[in-house]
Length: 143
Length: 187
Image (tube, rainbow over all chains, first blue to last red; front, side, top):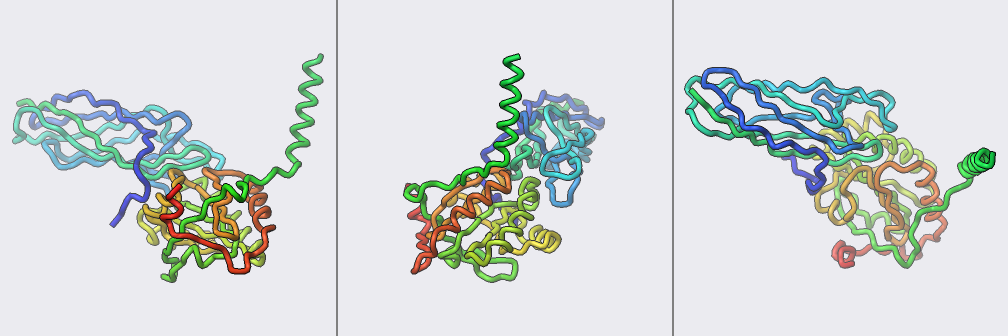
């Protein structure tokens, strides 16, 4: 069992309130999650440079939208004082796009799609513990 | 012209200053607080108590395998363990990896760490109060009191200055005095 070892208080990554999305039953739909990392911080990309580094990962709970495919932005390769080689990271503002399929049998109306965003951030001198944020996107399913 | 002289003088001073030995950052003895005791298991399953280190200067380092800046310090700490062990000094690593030994054991063998490492808990991190980020290191004097805290990556010389300063203190005849966590928290 994995337990958080630190109080999850340091919020250096913020999620912009997502815009409601219209989704047509039986059709594909894209959800965008806009993220902003505090200046001076970086977080590992979804494919970090080192096996011990914790990747940024967005996962979605089962809901009216199916088969999520998360598209991560291209990482930046940045050199930090604590690493011999450049690291695969995100900094500043970036966006995650998720491609869903809406089931043909989905019930029309308002729904919420919820997910979890896990990340771990550092400056060039220290690191904050891994953190998991809730992501919720309102969806209007139409026929 | 005057500016050039001032700039040159400043440059000379900075160059000279870099070779001057910095002062240790250890707190005055009367303002040091007792380090909370704890009992955790090392990689071999043996119990490690901070109070086992009574009479020694201890570098208590909170770190994690996912922490890049922590990895810079590890070879320094390996050097310190080797160099100062005979003077009653020890490094004790407290890993804050959520998956515990699954990550830490392979890391220890890959990095040839020569000092003891235990897996930390949320309770220990809270007891020490200032472990919001990694690395965070506490230098504990021979009497079991926190003499210095380093949050984030600092220079190797900062550690050396502190360690050498603390090693000057004589070993207490009865060993160090460590108190229960509750006493530490009652500030």
